[in-house]
Length: 137
Image (cartoon, rainbow, N blue to C red; front, side):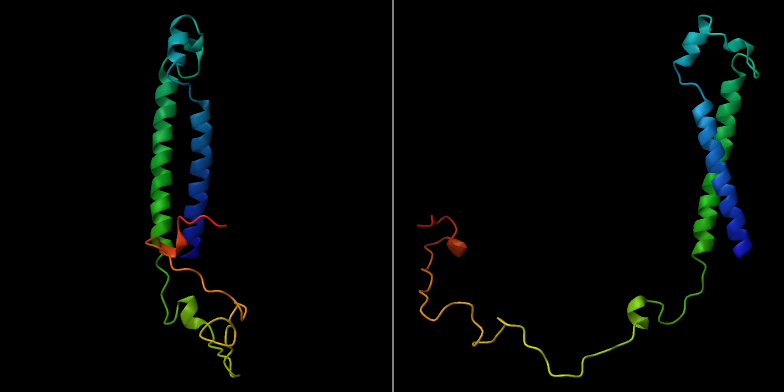
């Protein structure tokens, strides 16, 4: 199974690299107009219009190979047998503290208030929540 995954991965990488090269070699759509007025592409290896057909067909074939390799790698990559407790949370050791519980200051503890003893309570707001809209003095 590992050999198959490695072969698929190599084929996918080679198809991607060759496809990038073929796409960079191809001419744009505007290049044909320049060839009509003496661009000199008629003396190429594939003929006047043969290179566009050959490059586009080979790019299509390599795109199909790349797509099939991607689907195969995704399929075979998910075929691993699942075991009980395959989650990280299920396999983590449970280490609970054994000492006394620690109280967080400010939570349900009347002794740990942040306000001073002679503090004046905040005035009740008149219709606005949390004192919104009030200008500080």
